[in-house]
Length: 476
RNA sequence: UCCCCUGUAGCUCAGUUGGUUAGAGCAUCUGACUGUUAAUCAGAGGGUCGUUGGUUCAAGUCCAACCGGGGGAGCCA
Image (tube, rainbow, N blue to C red):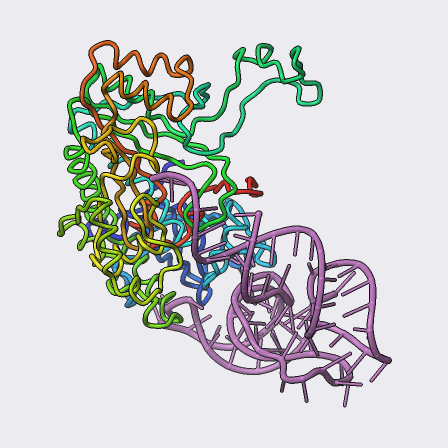
């Protein structure tokens, strides 16, 4: 069906043309003014319908949610709210939307309600904006890396590697769950399973990405990731998308530089290409915050926050410095923290929030954590106590990036495997990269949905992915 | 998994120390009006108060269990 995208028709340059518009009705005012949206932009196009020339039965079908196709001349609008409009000569209803039953109305809905209508929430301005931006960020991720000589690597989604310790895993099997084959010890005999061994959905593509980096130099993965944790928070999903660059001949400092530059690039890309959507989301956020007490509101607007991150250096401190800073902080001295602040214990949310939101008021990169609280593959520092790990924390969301310089020394890595109880025969292929032509390398994982939260100002991660997967929720 | 909050009309919410026939705005329907911007005006319909059980002369209101939703914590990205 040949038709014009609404985003093209809002431009005065198209005035005078005969145009055809297909889209969904947002409102129908005065039995004359039809606001139509086709997803090409957050803005609606106003169609002006001649009551005299349009029969009543047809007009009655122009209800919120209906799909229509109309043609006519694009003219400069006589009204105030828009620059152009279409004088409709012919209009057809492609799909009716029974107004008694269609749940999406032209007014404010709660995010809760729309989450239960995930199949229809795309029709709202908010979710239209969020998912246009999500697309833009996907594209920008690939563009950023491609422009800098990285290769996109498709790491496996089904994996037999269970050594990463990144969380509970979803099992993948083709066995008949009602008649599981057992071995002599009475345990499930995975030799009879599809792959002949236990397999799961991936919790990270990192280990495989490292293998690629040790030949291609700079690689990145961007794929779905699965965690079977019983997490019920506004920033966790059981199925989410993660970006994992991995770079050979790069140390922790290069890794931090990459993370910071990457984030700034993405935010700038959003500002450059999604100004209309961002300004709507900024307005939405301000409306939401009207009901909140002053101290819970954002000090800066959405676009101000994005610009602030772009224009300012990320704060870089070590874990040890963070501990010192926290122990000298007001809330610590006044006993406001619930959890202890001691060297060797992981930082709690309340501590990270204090550092990022109260003390520095900007993104913070914390490095060099105690080895005991970080993964086996992170490179041991010369102090023997800490590893070259880094977490990037941003206001409102917390950890958006986690990464490290990888342990490239075979003996050290073998020691770590033993210490973490990881059998060498499970990771022989990973260790091989350290046996043959090992080199300094580093990488990180960025939670894509957490990035989208930061860019759009949405406060629940379930509202930045089309169909969220969380405990007890796999509808749609 | 733990802590806190919550469940009343299609939606967003009121509902007093337990007390007649459970309300409002929006949406819907009917009518009016017609250059409107979430149009406006008038009228109408719309409820097993999440479920089950208990206390009571009497439960939307109090208690318990269960189910659903949200926020926070942990785990992490």
